[in-house]
Image (cartoon, rainbow, N blue to C red):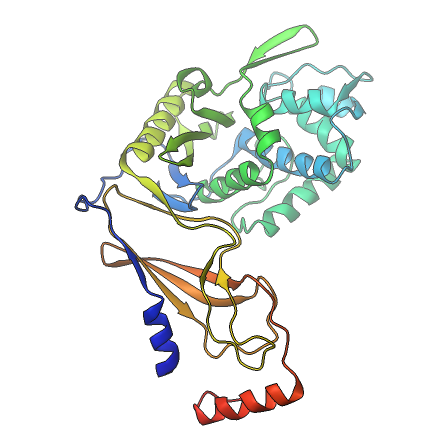
Length: 387
């Protein structure tokens, strides 16, 4: 970094400290699950984990991706919540004895009814009917599921069906499932809240409770999905939202492969309580606010406001000392587009490196005139920054 940019970075260095001393490291819970992970969805930080990248059988947690694809179809107006789907024999016959919403072949159900059946009753028949109603066939729908997994960066996840019944080609990890859950609540908060938090649903004269028992035990829990097969054990992805000062924190717990329904409920509750009790989430910067204005060369303007497009947070232990250091890129050459990366925020907690986050241009900077570009090119050369 040149002396000029180093001086700018120093001038932009901002430190924030809480009054209390920083506590000792928080012990990670010991849970008897095959794998688990706790994510603060507000900051995007993993607070604790055990074997988060171990390949696991997701069972009905697969239905989270099924719902995500259907939510996208609703957003894109490819279907509506009142769109009617004719129940196929394939949907009706799926895995006798497995969880179902008790659809009848040849009859129709709406997308809305099927989503309740999928996410409240964990109906495998609902998963097949939704796949056929949205994509025309189960196979085409599963292709979309895997395409979405790739676009979301779920590198250790693959689906072979929309319901999660055992298949060697259906697998995931606790980490990937936490990312998927976070995207569901971020991209479709209203839809997720409508279905995931419903305690019971009646279809065809049959009332079934939501298998997520935390909905009855913790008022802050508003989702998300259970899973169980003989080989997978009992799993639960749970999400809870609580106020932390002026911030609404959302935690997502993933607990997979426990011994019973009771165990997955207890362990998920313990994990969420551990996260809320031992950490706090602090807003670093508001989305759209300029945190600095670094020098721009060869541009119609000589500086660009930089910051974050969304509110940016960090999760720390209560009383931790937070230091923010801005590192603008050097040299910044116009033209620059809004949203283009122009620097980096370094965050230190109690003097230790914690996070590095990209800073972007909040406004475009078009190129200068021919004379302006030539003049700045000469000045760059004189400063040894190249042209």
